[in-house]
Image (tube, rainbow, N blue to C red; front, side, top):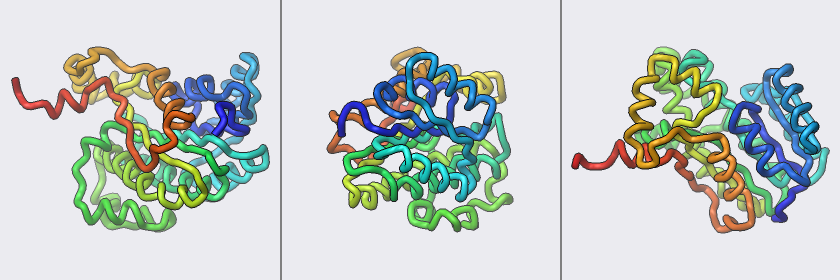
Length: 274
């Protein structure tokens, strides 16, 4: 794929989405998508003022029709070379059911919709989380999370409201599902000569993370940062750099993989006591 794809689609215009659009959007038509029309319009205007060619579309990633319309709009702009899905909710922002709807179902819908419009040689990155890397799920549930049709995903008994009531648990489950569902989808994407991977960020300095740091999990997150080998919070640019690699010409043999970008936080948590 060329270094300047015709169309770059970015869902979610928070810290990671905005940094990614700036990092890989030069020379392309950038299609921004977000559920918040006001914030979306403001970000699109900012990027245009910086010289980017930007289109925008209000999109609810948990709505099949809305996601389908986004994919159709992207294809109408030209060959879809890159898709980066950053849209999501965190535990402090929403209920367990909302997290499953946006973070889990939303990823499945975007993954399916763009599998039919991505151009040959194209690449996609779906943002998961180190919470997914740390999640421990039953292998049979993982199989069903990977293969159940998107429209039936939320009907799985393990995802019922009484089964997943805690937002933190819902978040970890959704992000693990993202990792394994994208891995499984790499086969279908490969038939279109396209690649798809996930990135699992650690604690990244975004407005969403600021809310989490001010919430019940804040002390635990700060302890993770302090214990990590890099001993710092991540930046949106750290994630954008990883996206650039996974969607660029130096990763053409990488698909169905998850790249953990966490400053070594998971390594520190799993390291044997010294």
